[in-house]
Amino acid sequence: MSDNEKLLRQAERYAGMRRALLFINALSYFVWIGAQALQFLPGFTPHQSALIQFVAGPIWLVSLLCILVMGVRLYMRRDLRGLIDDERTIKIGNQAFQAGYWVLLIGIALVYALLFCGIQIEGGIFLPILLSLGVAVPGLTYAALYRS
Image (cartoon, rainbow, N blue to C red; front, side, top):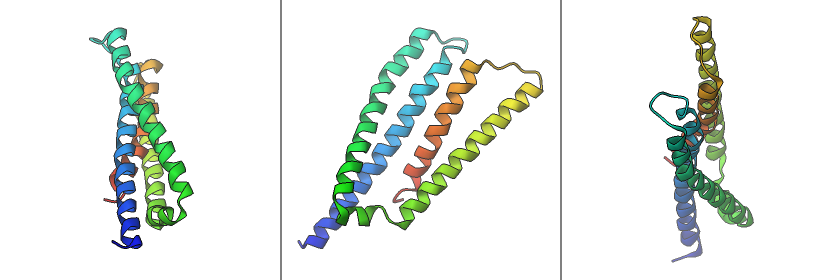
C-alpha cells in the first residue's frame, strides 16, 4: 500500500471519528442542559433531573476532550488536515451556524408570542432549552452534513 493510500484511509478514519464524536457531543450536551428544565415540569423531580445530568455530563465532557485532542493531533499533521478540512467542511460549518441562529431566533420568537398571548413561562424552563438548542442544533447539523 502506498503512502497516499495510507493517508487517504487515515483521513477517512479521522472524518468518521469526527462525525461520530460531534454527534455524541451535541446530543449529550442537549440532554445535559435540557435536563435542567425537567425539574420544573410536573412529574419530574430534581433528583431525576440530577440523575440525567450525572449520566449525560461526563459523556459530553469526554466527547469534548476527544474532539479537542483530535483537533490538536490534526493540526500537527498538515498533510492530513488538508484532506479533512477542505472548502466543503468550511461551508458545512457556516450552514450549521446558520441553522443554529434560525432555531434560536424562532425559539425566542415563540417565547415572545406565548408571553404576548398571556401564557407565563418560567425562565428556568425555557432558558436551558434555548441554550441546549443553540448548541445542539449547530452540532447536530454539522455532524449530519459532515462527509454525508
